Length: 593
Ligand SMILES: *[C@@H]1O[C@H](CO)[C@@H](O)[C@H](O)[C@H]1NC(C)=O
Ligand SMILES: *[C@@H]1O[C@H](CO)[C@@H](O)[C@H](O)[C@H]1NC(C)=O
Ligand SMILES: *[C@@H]1O[C@H](CO)[C@@H](O)[C@H](O)[C@H]1NC(C)=O
Ligand SMILES: [Zn+2]
Image (cartoon, rainbow, N blue to C red; front, top):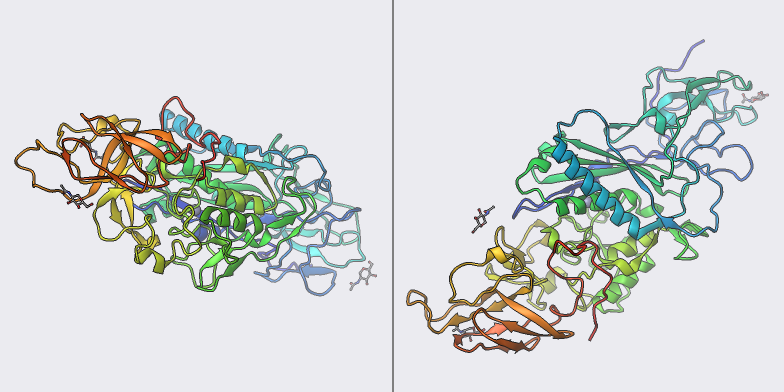
């Protein structure tokens, strides 16, 4: 018998990946998810026909006794060759209400050179990220153990294609080169995988077990393969911290497994931050769970927003270019969240996607940095104290149709709030129409006013500038940032915030110039009402600081500017503290005036 040559089949495999870089102090933290996911294979479980045989993998081509698949053939539908329980062969959606998603992390045993201490830090960070995500997203849980599918295009040389034979669409011949399944570069243990059979004859029940059925993972709705490694991708891009892919989806398209690679060297970095690692893992998890350009077109519209997976149908394409060429996600919750955020009813307010290094007219897997700065799904994450799990991101996860999302847990984004539909456009940022942007390169305050900052740009801002925290010592809330000098009246500590000011003590040292320019300074503040507060300069009394106005301080020359709608308005914008859960902050919606 002449066997067809070994073929590499493409059976509904998409390929997807995302990468995040960490902010080394002052560096741009970058995510390369899109590059990585674009090279990964995704196995999708086939939908189950209501009665009996598995649905047709639709590999195309003529009906024949043996139907070798042309190399590289790619179809839109995944294949399964044998009946039996598999991923995606779950019972039809029940009406049971969604439950918090159970994410199981699996770390390959092979040596990654981590010390015990590093391993502990890492596991704690991942555990916290997983806990956060589970507290935000609910799913219709996977009944029974989670068992991943094997890729028929890898283990099988051909499928029987005669629809009047018993083994129609089943595997007719094993690929002798088949070893195992992988997720990114993680080898999936056989125990996590469904078994597979080969049916040597088209019409005979005789089968050969190629691989036994694994035990699967109990109580698991998403399987996260976590790999700590010094990969080429980590080395190639010095700011890359991590990257991720999703590798399997269920019949509704919901991702069931994914891999996150954390770059080994970053963990040993002196600038390592536990909270930044938690955020990085969350960012990557959100990609793998659905915030991905490879998945946008598979999002589902569901009849009830509180019932993920109930009465759902494909949304079709959600990303479109707006009138100005900005790619946006147009899905109902995203639009509503953005309209609320910008206080605008503009109909073109879809979720704006980052366009840096993206071909025109193509989506990316991050929010546009100028418009949704500070979001956990921005392309670069800044200092961890400035990163927010914002309402627009949670709305996007809700619009996947796979999750019921606790939108009430969103953290205030602050950036751009109430600024209208044009906020963040290139023209608007340059004509200084918004206090969120700056011009020049002077000293000032980051927009959350927790840090002093310097007016800077970065590639994602495309020429727009904003006050970014300084590399070192810019936190007003850190007591240890205080210095000896007293001519400026600066005060550092938990209740201190950044103010634009050119205050100098009148009895200043003779070496100082008679006037000083306005810059970011730290003073104590206390709230007296929404958007109402007093400030205290070191060595002086408390004085009212009228939001949007200025105030003078006794025995000082110069002025303090009092920011409007930034202080005493967002209960969840606070410095980190040891005894308060910092992330996500308690659900305290801001008071609107
Ligand atoms: C398909 O199988 C049936 C039943 O074995 C057989 O009669 C028929 O000739 C086959 N068709 C082709 C195109 O091989
Ligand atoms: C930050 O500044 C403090 C005091 O000014 C100094 O001791 C410390 O070494 C600096 N750290 C870095 C990373 O530059
Ligand atoms: C402080 O800045 C204001 C403008 O904001 C300016 O009018 C004033 O002269 C400056 N005062 C000093 C003492 O530098
Ligand atoms: Zn990313």
